[in-house]
Amino acid sequence: GGAAAGAHDHVRGLLDGPPVVSRVAMRPGAGLVFGRTGGRAGGVPLLGLPGNPVSTGIAAVLFLIPALRALQGLPPGPIVGTATLGAPLRANPGRRDHIRARLAVAPSGTAIATPLDRQDNAQISGFAAADALIVRPAGAAACEPGSVVDIIRLSGGCLDL
Image (cartoon, rainbow, N blue to C red; front, side):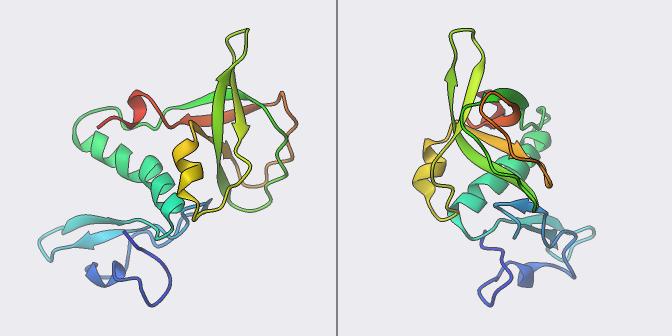
């Protein structure tokens, strides 16, 4: 962990050569790094997660857990589904965004994803309270409540190792 662009990034120094991946176009979690270390033929894969707590958690959901599951011969996941949006979302002009949300079930049985009020990358309590991530592609237009959005569930079998 602790991959970053600053002087306190000690992960990159462990790599044998330049990283294969040095950033990803997502928020939060852009500071991910992947490469090889160990000096042996082919080296040992090394995944450096970002330093902010929420960025680390989301990068683990999207990259680390799927890799560990694949190494065990399990379907990698994460499982992407859909839900009805419970509150408005602004346009997303930048990179792919992962918005922490709470899930509820409507009387019709439809999942409703409501974004948490605070999306601060250093606020681990918000990440811990989230049931799902609303996945917003780069360039997504504003969404009104009732819109269908893609989600990644943060509870259930998709995260089990």
